Length: 372
Image (tube, rainbow, N blue to C red; front, side, top):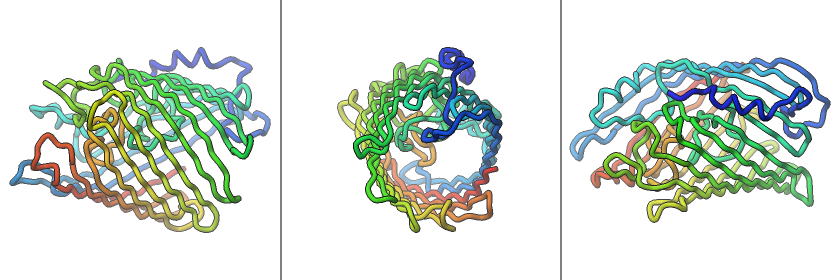
């Protein structure tokens, strides 16, 4: 396991007694000290059908997962420190199963029986155009889950420069990030360097267009714990490619009475010669903030070396080398809870086993999410 507190040493480089941070980056109100406590919870029932075993055999799996994420923050408008936990319990024991396998394979970005430190960070905004973060914090760049699983936290430091409402652009931003040991499992020697630029253009009062361009490089990927994802090209169990990814995300948003969001994400690994591209398309209709229901559809086609599989989403069974569809219907189930029904249909198009490449796996998830 990695050491989540390792990155906190960098916080001392970012924080001084007179420094302060906007909890809302667009806020211009005076600094106010306060304490904020939040708890997010998840209950998931999951069924995965027709998992490929051989040309003549498939299997089904199902499991239940409970997750609680408490979070405590201190600070005002210009300075915040915070910490959070991640408590998981699942009916399966994913790490134990992997240890028992002849060829270890762990598809999940979490330990199904675990209590761990999820967040430990400081954020500082000494002036409106500068934001500094250090420790173990949420990803500050608007990547899709094709590149970065939203449940993982970069552990290191980030700096963001931004300008708002200039020449018709509601926001310009640039972020530099360095992280090491950001996975739930052992990746202490794997470094991530991210450089990203963002521009958001406003159309009508309720519409906007956002463009995010990023360069993501993973150094020493061969130091990953071998059991974490195995979709990338390997020879004798070892990764053979470097991962230096260029990623471009475009988002169109229409707010108002019936919110709509369209997302297109294209990436390519500049360090690979083949099997190096990824495409992620999504459409979201409605909003659980403004209406009772929301619908979402995602299509993706991700080559096996488009990105380093260990850090991409684990909700699609494979992280790279696959193509498929996801549909979701969500509704509010109370003031603090929402109900989600998610169906997926996907295939391991780049499987090393030819018979598996056109084999479709079906997944169904029912989730109750709560937030206090």
